[in-house]
Image (tube, rainbow, N blue to C red):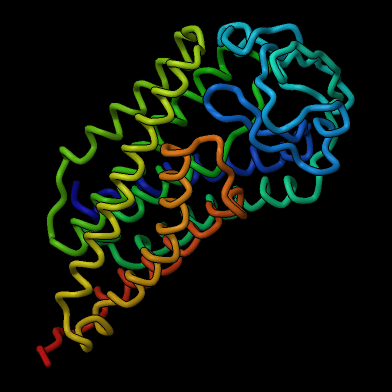
Amino acid sequence: MNPSDSKTPILVFATVVAIYAILGWLDVRNYAQGGWATAPDNTVTQVLPGSPAEAGGLQVGDKIVSLGGIAVEDAAGRAQRDRPEVGEAWEFVVERDGATASFDVTFGELVPERKFLAHANFLVGFCFIIFTLRAFMQKQTASTQALALAGLLFSFAFISGPYFGSSMLRSIDTAVGVLLVWLGVASILNFLLVHLRAGGNRLLYVPGLAVGLFIAWRIMATPAATDGLNNFTNVFVGIVAVFYLVASLVTVYRSFAGATGSEREASGLQLMMIGAVVGLLPPMVGIAAGVVAPQVVLPGQNFYFLTFIAIPITWSMAVLKKSAAPAVASD
């Protein structure tokens, strides 16, 4: 579609996404927290200090067997259960040191760190919506169009919508969101090819679409969440995510390395490179570590995603700078 002709559809889509995100952001105050994290095999890797999980007795290294009377492998049962509310208690059954232990964990309000991370997620998502759309509204080119679509789609990696009481609606909402996220991941690389090499490649969407459909299938079909299926999902998703991140970094670097100093400045390649390194490198390290050693928690790992905020800010500035710049002679 011609960039100018796509202005109205993109603006409408952006409005819908923004409203959806605002409703989700308003729902943060209703979040309840347990305060633990697990590896794909349901082994506890983190227990936040001062959290309900710590108060209840959960320990790093515990292997969770069931939560609130529902086995961790029972994906269908877990999907049908409503989210926990503040003050609600779940019985935890875990394997610890070769024995089985059980105790109650009473969910509480988000601790300051988790509250910050919840709001920061939405902030990053809104930046992907606002900055990429702003670039497209200022200048309708193939590059700004590709960037706007990538930003709107990838924003679903950080935003969520309102909570649905119906388990079916929750599943559909999550499955659609996952598909949009992975189309967004592929769209970022496609944008770089459009902007830096004057041509995208639709085949780049195949890996992302495969991952998105696979996860959507898990959400909708709810097969037993066995350790084997969970580990396969972790490796499959991680490898494809690292592929896109590495390919994006390499694409930017090759254009940056092949340009002269004046060309880098005039075309915004310096901004593109800064955004790529700052925005993509930390999440790539975290994802790669999650594939190789899923039970290892890197220092500050929960905050790595915040660096993504550099992408929409620097790349939207770079695209507008290139579109406004006159032709630059080689040094």
